[in-house]
Image 1 (cartoon, one colour):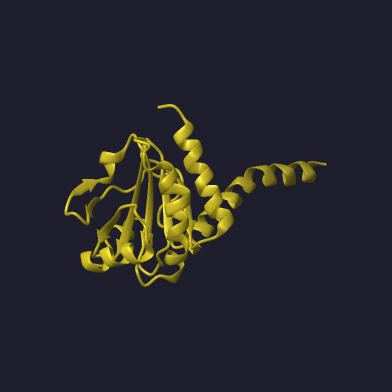
Image 2 (cartoon, one colour; image 1 turned 120 degrees about the vertical axis):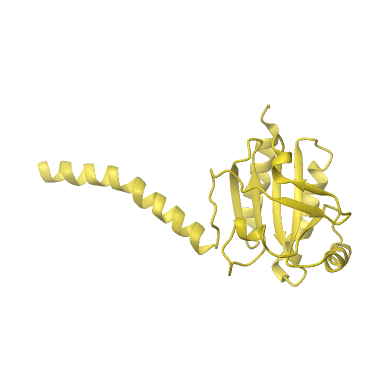
Length: 181
């Protein structure tokens, strides 16, 4: 009986540790260096019109960061969904911001990419990759979305384009926008 009690005690105490390790491991295999619950690393972004803005200037809004690149086939597949299912539904909401962040590409390439893929949400520049590497490892791939709440905390992370995960992200954004300030 004492052994059973010790086994149960070990299981109850150890399982959360194993569970957290599994979650951390999942994030690590996806190439993230941030996790849900972290404060989003701040940066200054440059828009295609030359305007700059700090991410922290957007606190108070629900923010979606979408890391992309013109050479990324998965990005090209996901971006029309972001346009229709997120941007078109929330672009008029003053409590929402969407930043498409073009990874290691210049202004001309990024402008041409936005026109070719037919998106209207703002694409911004991360020409050196410095912003991306605040969120993901050096060898990690793009096609990443990061949802940040009004307090600047990361509340959802995606990698690649999975329809189930995308729908979860759409729901997370809607639920977060439905919360009162």
